[in-house]
Amino acid sequence: MSKEEQVIQQIVAKFPFLEGKLTNPYDRRIHAEPLYKEDFEKVLDWLATEGGFDTFHLVIGFDSGENLEFVYVLSNADKIILNVKQYAPKSNPVINSVVKYYKNCIWHERELIDLFGATVEGLPEGPHYPLPDGWPEGQYPMRKDWKVEYFDKNTMTYNPPAPEAKEETPEAPAEN
Amino acid sequence: MTNKKVVIPIGPQHPALKEPGCFTLTLEGEKVTNAVVGVGYNHRGLEKSCESRSYIQCLYIIERVCGICSHSHSTNFLRAVEQIAGVEISRRANYIRVLMAELERLHSHLLWLGVAGHIIGFDTLLMYSWRDRELVLDQLATIGGNRVNYGINTIGGVRRDIDAQNIEDLKKMCTIVEEQAKYYAQIALTETTLAARLGGVGKLSHDDCIKYGAVGPTSRAAGVADDIRKTDPYCLYEEMPFDVITTEYADVFGRTVVRVLEIFESVKIIRYVLDNLPDGELVVKVPRKIPAGESVTRYEAPRGEDVHMVRANGTEYPERVRVRAPSEANWHGMAHMIEGDYLADAPLIIAAIDPCYSCTDRKIIVDNKDTETQSVLDWNQLRQYSIDWYKNRGIDTTKIQIPEKKLYF
Image (tube, rainbow over all chains, first blue to last red; front, side):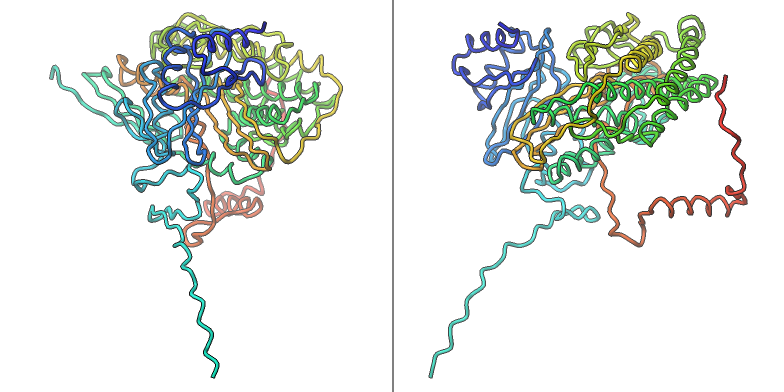
């Protein structure tokens, strides 16, 4: 049995709801299907404290339609990379910071705030990153519906075209 | 004056490197008691622009994430794309990618050595190491056509081959650079002024390196034997003979020693590649539409671990591209490195991770909409502009005789 398979078995034994949700597509890589906040936090807590995944590489944000998806890239002593994923509803994307496990997550999580509009609770105070000062509130450029062509960098405003008004079909003139 | 704290902002222009970053340092006397790192001035929206471009267009954007590590980023991006597409590139293409990667490491380490020398007032080291770096850049330009952004990579392999003349020139270059590196190693390991200036400065212990996720020479200088070429090999690095260089100094001195000694390892790899270059196609065909999937790839860039993630959606355009450059990883421990040291050491400590702000922040957009204050010049216009610029100052560059190029030794 490969080391990757051993890790998958170990995780599934601890969290049976992950049965069939972990894959090993390439050497030294394990991908997990996205989980919602409660399950994700249970799994991450175990991975970081008992599961041996003590190295955090980065967290990547995705706009997956109704949800924002956050992929945490972790590795263990065997240099196996594990992608664990968290879903947060786009309407209220609140997640908890993983800073209590990984000190090097801070810049990456700040990026999720600026670029995706996530609310990351428990993140220490500090400068925002990476968007410039004066960036308009509520504009999250890595969301799929945000288009660069509507952003005016001189005035720092986002000006999407107004939704097209429905053209009223003129009534046919009454025949005399 | 005791207990008086002074807050000094350094930046956004870095005092040693020509890139923007702001470091807010709180001082007690001359000692830094608190440091706040501010980066983000170079955020250019690279990842967003990749989402609306084809994979081959993305390649050219990704190559421009960083000037120094251009090959690192493009190779890592392509490995992710090729992995998702299920494409195995030829052994020859892999060997050529390794060759370019190690040439890049050579020129990056020599560049850093010169910058470090300049910061500590040892400008002779700057002149020597940058002189030697030119030899490496000449070889990169001969093979790839450019000093940086060599454009050697393409999806499915490499765009240019290595011929017998290249091999001969590269071997000659290796001999010279290796000889010079022996001299630098001797200076680094025995020169007392250098050890006194760099020793104990910018400490980041083994445990702190792991805690803050430091990568590359920064962590190897603290004894963390983590080199992606060994721990997660790619491009056939498992076949290459080299050692992972570590020290126990955990300071700027250790980072210098690691970089100097890594020059020998890179030369070893280059020689192995040249002596064992396999036959094979340069490029294998890859469909324009990449099947749905995702991949996280790692790469040992000169500054440390470079991570790329690509998610494909079955079309010609990637769903998402994420670049985590080595500098982005090394910023986390920066405040810890500066705190407790003298203000005068701050520029050196910052430079010692060999930071690349562009890598951290990613991407640039050039538009030509504002024609009153901006203009985009093509090559000939730029050349003419520079000739006129000098002419206006009494220098006619067209009359300068360029002597025949000679090696320095």
